[in-house]
Image 1: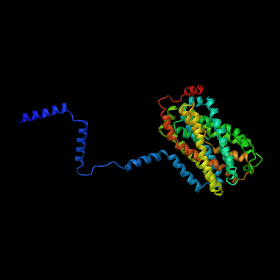
Image 2: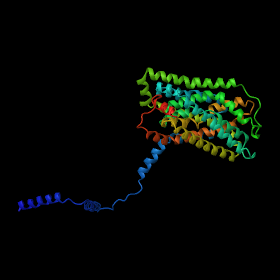
Image 3: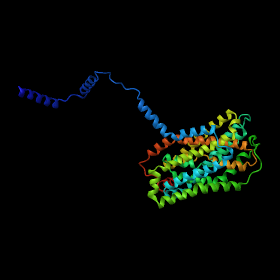
Image 4: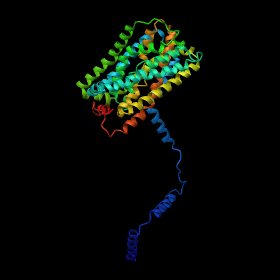
Length: 417
C-alpha cells in the first residue's frame, strides 16, 4: 500500500508540472488562503497612514528650517529690539563678522580655477548687471509713476523707497548661500555679487538722479543738497575689502595650502552650514533696526499692504525675466546663479546711500525710505528659499552632462549666441 501511495504522489507531481495552474486561478487560490489567514479578525483595508504623514511633514519642515527660522526672528525683532544706543555696534559686528564668515567658508569651498574662470566671462557680466540695475529700476519707476497719479493713495517716502529698492545692486551674502544650497554655480554668484557692489556707488546716484529729477510731487520733500559721496565710497569699499575680499582670499589660501584639512573641516564637520546661520543674523539685524525706528507704526495699513504686494510682484517679474533670458544661452547651474542675483537687492548699500544722498532728512523720513528695501529683502530670501528644492531638482535632471569646469561648456554656449 505504501508503494501505491508513493506512486500516486509521484504521478500528481508530474501532472502539476505538465499542467501548471493558470495565473488567475493562482491568484484566486492566494486570495482564499489570505482570507483563511485572517479568520480570527477583519481583513485590513488601505487607509490613512498617520506615521507616514508625520514623516512627510517632518521632512518638509526640515527642508524649510531656514524659512521657518527667518519668520521666528522677524517676529522677535518686531516685539523686542536692540536699544538705539547699541544699534551702531550691532550693525558693525553683524556687517563685518557675519559676512566675513560667509565668504571665508566660500573661499574654502570654491576651487580657485573655477573662481578665476568666472571672472573672465565678460558677456555674463554685462548680461547680469544690465538686468540688476536697468531692468529692475525701470520696472519699479513705471509702477511708481502709475501709482503717483493719485496723490492721496501712497506716502511719498514709500514711493521714493521703492525707487531706491529698484536701483541698488544685488545682495551678496544671501545670493551665495542660496545658490550653494540650490546646486547652482556659486563661483558665478560670487563674481556677479561683488562686481555689482563695486559698481553700485557710482551707478546708483546717477539712476536716482534720473528717476527723482522729474519734478514729480512725491519728490518735493527731498533735500536739494547732496552729501559727500566720498564717505559712501570709503564705507562701501572698506566693507567690501574687510568682509568680502580678505576672507575670500584667506579661504583660497587655506584651500590650496591645506586641502585635506580644509575639506575635512568644511564637509565632514559641517562647518559650511554655519553660513546659513550667519545669513539669518544679518536679516534679523536689518529688521531689528527697521522696527526700532518706529516708522512702521505711523504708516497706513493700506500702504504697507501695497508695498508687500508690489515687492512680491517685482520678485516674480524679475525672476521670470532672468530665468527666461538666461535659459536661452546658459547652462542650468549658471541660470540658477543668475536667478538669485538679478531679483535680489541689498539694503547694506541702500541705507548708507540714503543717509548720504539725502543728507538733511530726519531719521524718521530716512526710515520710511528704507522700509521697501527691508520688506523686499525678507520676501526675496523667503522666495529664494522656497525655490531651492525646485532648482536642485532641475539641475539634477541635467546631471548626466559634465558640470561647469572652467570656461569650456559655458564659453562654448556663449560663442554660439
